[in-house]
Amino acid sequence: MTEILAPAVSPAPEPASQAAAVGASFEQLPLSPALQSTLLQLEYRTMTPIQAASLPLALAGHDLIAQAKTGSGKTAAFALTLLTNLNPRHFAVQAMVLCPTRELAEQVTQEIRRLARFEGNIKVLALCGGSPLRLQASSLEHGAHVVVGTPGRIMDHLERNNLSLAALNTLVLDEADRMLDMGFHDDIVHVAKRCPANRQTLLFSATYPDGIARLAQQFLRQPREVKLPERHDDSKIRQRFYEVKHEERLAAVATLLRHYRPVSTLAFCNTKQQCRDLLDVLHAEGFHALTLNGDLEQRERDQVLIQFANRSCSVLVATDVAARGLDIAQLEAVINVDVTPDPEIYIHRIGRTGRVDAGGWALSLCSPADKRRVATIAAMLGNEPEWHTLGALQSGNREALVPPMVTLQILGGRKDKIRPGDVLGALTGEAGFTREQIGKITITEQSTYVAVARDIAREAFRKLSAGKVKGKAVKVRAINVSN
Ligand code: ADP
Ligand code: MG
Image 1 (cartoon, rainbow, N blue to C red):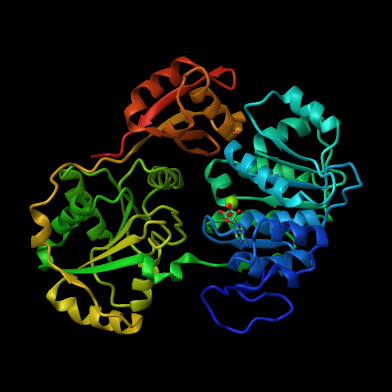
Image 2 (cartoon, rainbow, N blue to C red):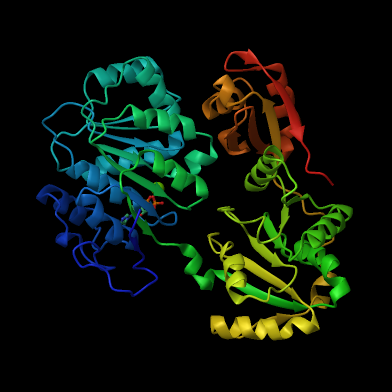
């Protein structure tokens, strides 16, 4: 893994042959005249930054890991590549796109169809749950050039020999981070193994958690990396400093949480002892808070991270060491319980909240003795620290902050061949819940964790316990964030 091109954030020189300039037109790309006319017709006049960074590499045949925020035009980046690799006169599946959900697969299918409009008769087929396997199988028999689907449904077709990948030249993983969140890791690896070895693989993701690199290592070949990290967009992180007496700082965290009411907050402490103390204070005040520390067993650590990432825990209290490698896409606030002496660490901490579309809060508590540290940090960031007082917040909202989701644990996981679709199916099928009421589904070796909206938690628990997942009765328990 080599190149890191970030035209949106760095004016650093790039090899002209590999990266197109931001705002450059598609005309300089080696695209067919048909695709060029489609782009004109769609009024795609200039490339978005991720397109400018990734298309020259992808069209040159490289494997790719591309990370850019939602709405940045990733679909066209891989769609133009797979359409370029495709021979319309050859009636066989030449490209496959894996997506986390049916809705996304359908959107991607539409976008590929739009872009393929002038390319002759190209058949793009969506293969997802919700429509009968048999119908899809007969569509496959009639021939498709491109298939777009969820890993589970693609596996089903592979198992039934409905889908041949012998002629495949392009494999795309779209929203890879979400697919990992939803427990599709093993399915993706399985599907990738069934593809011809000499294919091109493109991985697209909005965030870059550890799991992505591990996934990529398994089946991408010398991938180029193109990252447009949002965290450099400081304008999206609103920083505020609060001066407090040393002994007031733990209670001050609760005041901040009640005032700002972030759904997910990462609270950084400098020591493990401070983590424990803060957790006690937050629990006493009724918050759903958890901590990460080195004393946890792997399974406990997983459970903490799962509950935090799926929004059934409001606050995660951690030291910098414990939070290493943590990548949570939706983090509304970071609270620095202490100002760190190291400006680099400060910048790293607050960068975690800059990925929320609405912008994130970076709130720092600072004792009078720490004020000099804040001056150093501000000098390094080149901005004036914004000081605020806690007094102004105290009279505010006293209502408890409650996380929107509750985690249900199903005793049964990968070893029982449970897949996300099985759980989603059980909840949205007979149980009658909507897709919107169901959050993240995480599958580990032994267990499956599903986040459900708090107001349906009891009923979902009851229906899951009484019903079946993958044709079998399952044991379910609700995980209560201790408080
Ligand atoms: P992402 O997958 O990164 O979240 P999408 O691929 O869904 O983003 O693109 C977001 C929107 O931008 C879509 O409506 C798409 O049609 C539009 N779009 C993509 N590329 C361009 C472009 N070069 N110029 C104008 N609009 C574009
Ligand atoms: Mg997308």
